[in-house]
Amino acid sequence: MAKQLFYAKSEKGLLTFSNKREVMDWLLENDNKSLLVSIERATGVRSFDQNSALHLWFDQLAEVLNASGFSVQKVLSRKMDMDWNKESVKELLWRSAQIAITQKTSTTELDKVNEIDLIYDHLCRHLGEKFGIECPSFPNDPTKLK
Image (cartoon, rainbow, N blue to C red; front, side, top):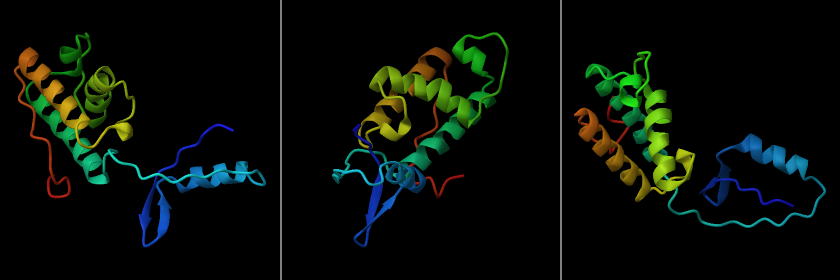
């Protein structure tokens, strides 16, 4: 049987799964089968606040790029002009840098200590050197900004 990975938080001695439907579907699919379940403490995975900060920064950078007159195509050398938004910053800038630097495709896989900072630094250096863009500071409390 293939290994299946689910993420959960421990609260008051109970596990709360981040994707309950996926867990339930897997359990139903494997009903009446012998299962080996192991629980490991995950370290290094980014937190909910880091995820919020990351997405807030995508939005802030999109605003800076748009205000500076740098369309997606100008930055990525395409012909038709489009304005930046949170998703285009994430998919076209961040994810490209993320894959090149970490070989990880999802932001959910990023190490919360080093990899987000590493990608941020590379991306800001690139935008500064190539386009004279000063990136917004990375939010340290996404709930208090915006």
